Length: 138
Image (tube, rainbow, N blue to C red):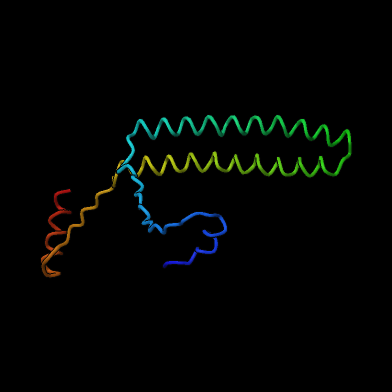
């Protein structure tokens, strides 16, 4: 797709060249799986950050509530309400983090329940005979 830039080139006293650019696609590399230590380390780091955010949010909420009561400012109450919602959302993230860790641990363990179903092949007479013998042994 070639466009005529001659008027611009004349006005600026330059020459222009058209260059075709082909984009390079970069693939994101995802690790196949995280090791148990990496999962634990990430969990502890995230947990500590969320816990800190919740505590700081509660301290700030206490301060803004005192300010709102003293000034009776509608804006202060609005900010307090937004902060309250933010702390509640962070608490929900904290609980979700624990659920996610539990799911990851269960996923790493794999299936734990193995069910073996035994099936009797024969006539009803043979089944009754086998059951009678089993009852006699008890």
